[in-house]
Amino acid sequence: MSDTRTASGRPRHPPESWIILTQTPAAQGPSGEFDPDASEPQPPGSLAALIGRVLAEMDELQFASFSKDDALDLGLLLVELGRQRSLPIAVDITKGEQVLFHAALDGATPDNERWINAKKRTAMRYEVPSLLVGLRARAAGGRIEDNAWWDQTEFAAHGGAFPIYVRGTGAIAVVTVSGLPQKADHELVVEALRTVLTPER
Image (tube, rainbow, N blue to C red):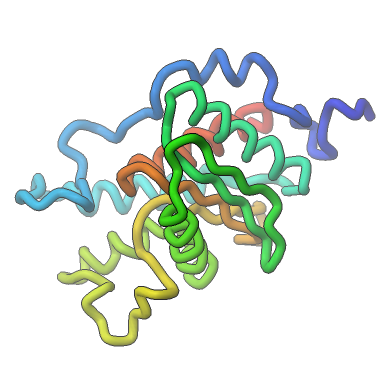
């Protein structure tokens, strides 16, 4: 097998076609969709709709297998997207106790490292995107941070951490972005996952 491709058949490094596909900013959710950072009243049904979208993303964005080369591809793509758009982000991909990829772009701060760790722990603990953990608490009538058992020094139910799912196995790693509003962090990760998985479909 050529050393320009991973064992699963994806290119080892982000090809030029990925860059062409990703010249525009991360796709935003539908107009009127729930915004977890908004202080004003939200459109009726918008929270349930966003939860449904995240659940659909979890089902869609699954790998056949996931190697260290795949982690490198995904991390490099997120870095390329961030550089193209001048985004002040930090990117992390972790499997268990091993960091497979980590980078901080211009504008990222030490606070982003704290957010990455807290969101990553949340996605690892619940095996769902960190955004969904916060949204489910909202759907139950409150904020998860308001519970005495929720340790805000260790966990953050804010968007940006998304488990790496292997079909038939489950969550085996987590990819995290920090530096944008939480929903934008989540959407950037989803965009990158969808792009690297396109050759598999």
